[in-house]
Length: 241
Image (cartoon, rainbow, N blue to C red):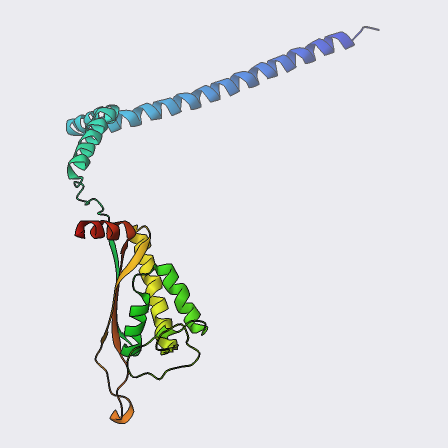
């Protein structure tokens, strides 16, 4: 019996190889055709676009490219110009130097207090430090200290400190004066006064409005207090001598 197995195997191998080569060749040819078509289409489109572009547009594009390529020099020049303009526009310093003040003043207008009591309190406060004046007025509110009065005021037995024994504890007027003195102390601190002393304290009658149905007039008073430094007061005294 002849062996038929080997030639069959060889024939099959040849067929398979032929088929593989044919498939490979067909695929390679198709892919090459597709790539060639794509390249040809791209080149034709580029040629058409270049033919449509005018020389003016090409020149403008070139100028734009130059501008984009050289932005640093122009930006530096503009920055220098803007800095110079800012320096030129800067306003000169017109701020005046601060002058040290020697006084602190408080003006009170139309306080609802008795002018008679306010005159007595001004006399009581004068030639004293602001702090001591506030402390003594607080004692008046507690009725530990009386304000000496002049004029038609009845004598009181408990007021032994005064020669005549005439004095009172005006509540509203003292409360108002404490507020005024606190404002004066704040003004003195702002002005930078060292050891301020009350040199002037004046109280006057203000315009008194009528009360209900015009039966009586209400109490009103103007108050002005000035405090100065202790050193300046001593200098003035020495000059007068």
